[in-house]
Image (cartoon, rainbow, N blue to C red; front, side, top):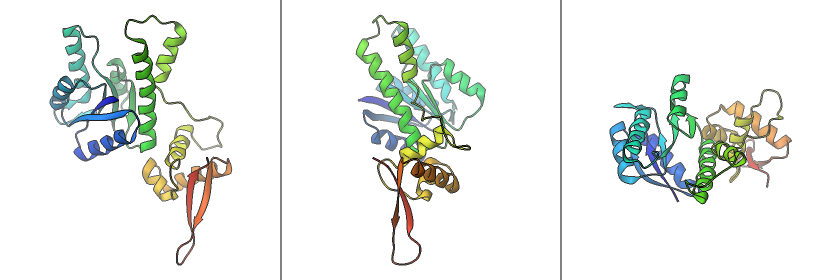
Length: 231
């Protein structure tokens, strides 16, 4: 199991992320923190494999956590600190660049749904498994180096889409209806897009044979449209 430390200034958001981790195969939450100081202390004590790291913390930047843990690792000669996926509302390019320079393996902008979250964790799981299977001193070649770098990124959805549709959003919507049938409103809530946008993508999936439309009839009124990924 890949151990995860969740760091977010809002305990309610942190709890949501912890539940998302629990729903993802191969991961377990070992702790939660809401400050830079608390995150550094928890990381030192728990030695997690992965940080889910917010940038906006009450006593500083989440990136300060990466600075301190990297300094710890350099001082003890143990290599590097834990890997990190930055999960934040910070959209400034300077913040993104700083996260990259500090070794973050992913950057997920709030708000997002479980589908986007699970994609990032699945990509990290592949990277982690590749590294663990070889060991830190193993020799590699260019093909494997490329595979390791690519493993940290989710596989994109096919790009040949209708005008006005984006592949990442299509992947989110498709993942939302993979396990159960949902209405357009429910898909919108899960993915963070508007209801009309969710409806447009769902209709595209149905036309392309990637989802099924089912009508649920109640006691009165128009039937409810429910969508589920085609098997």
